[in-house]
Length: 86
Image 1 (cartoon, rainbow, N blue to C red):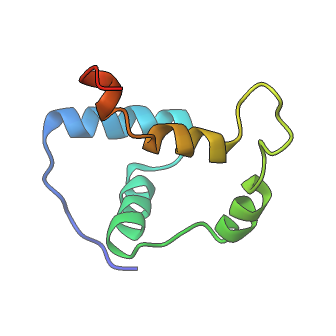
Image 2: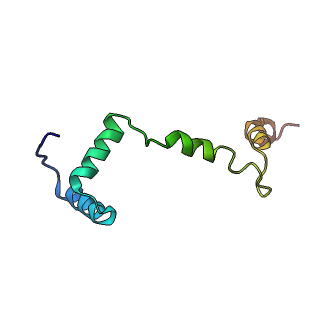
Image 3: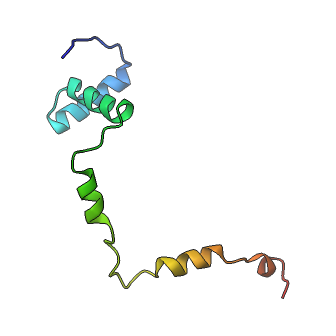
């Protein structure tokens, strides 16, 4: 690991300091994580597992309409109604 020095604005430092205390990690670790996420586009190791578990999570819900009906309604042409044409 290489050592480096950063100059950052006071408000950014304060935010990093607060998050550092909340998560109980160093500011350096927060910066490393942010760099990995933004510039290296790293995803959590279990990202695929999480996505697969989330797929279909609402499929059995009865309190929301089906997505097909929703999309059909959103795509419905309403120009005639809006202009009062029958």
